[in-house]
Image 1 (spheres, rainbow over the protein chains, first blue to last red):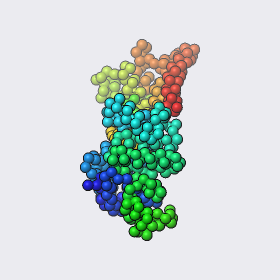
Image 2 (cartoon, rainbow over the protein chains, first blue to last red):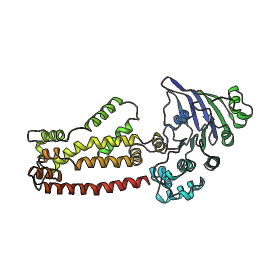
Image 3 (tube, rainbow over the protein chains, first blue to last red):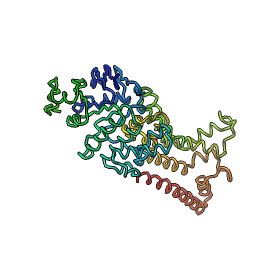
Image 4 (spheres, rainbow over the protein chains, first blue to last red):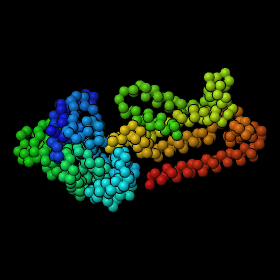
Length: 238
Length: 195
């Protein structure tokens, strides 16, 4: 049984075909890194999986115990490239989804404190979200999604534009979440090094087509497709 | 306050597919009514509430209720329009984040309004300013009856027409003072949102 099953997904914006018959099966509990240059359709695919965008053709289904089915915010978490912080305190940001689910206040206090601790933001609990640095804001957004303990966590270029320290902190949080909750993580990145560091399997998306999918070691050390070879060697111009 | 949901609805529906023509028409009406002369609003409400009008049976002509009705007609497009602009300016990222965390319907609208609260407060300030300074419509619909429908603005008109300029200026000062205190409160509330 797969955790996320993408079947024949196609998407076009006007005349531009962004996704062309994507077939992807993400296994339960794995960290899958979806690689590709900018404009290859990675974000669009992730937004379709998250239910924030609809596919022109094809379908996305989730495995047992995941009530995603295009309804984000249930068992599917989503963190975007740019930290989309609400104009509230850090605590209120992270508590947002729990409040929507009418979780009792004392439980919210506990869960938010734990989530902030895991991303190294315990001390910033009462800070206004707009006073955080970009890295801190992104870690807060990760905590805001992770506190709901979604079975599937979708991450869209979450470390783009962050400094190495924040990248390391966020990658540690991703691996920690995956290990702790046993959740499936689908991370979109254009950074092969990051895919190698956090991914267990990887796939290359190029011009709206999924070129190659394999475990991370094979993907980087013995890629089958010439385009994958060029991409992992950094020879692909983009 | 009821005008805020109108503006929010216009902004949120804009993102949904379909109904584009209806929304364009609704926005065109709202923005056209921005410039509606208050005396025209007063005349319309007068015709509605007069004994031969469709709502004449209610007996609201020359009553504070009729005046409020005229004010609502004048202020609604302004507050709805400014709210629409404020809510539209909330980034798609923020709306998507709320959706991805499970917000739907009213919960999503409440979140977006909260994110746009500075702009929404501006809408309230602009609407209040328009209402407090209004004279034409309330004069027509209220009739400027002493102890019943006479308000500061209509009292200023009356005193001026009588040549009692000192009283008119004093009333103007009171009106400005009330406006100043309320705007100061709203401004401070708005600034707190920035910090």
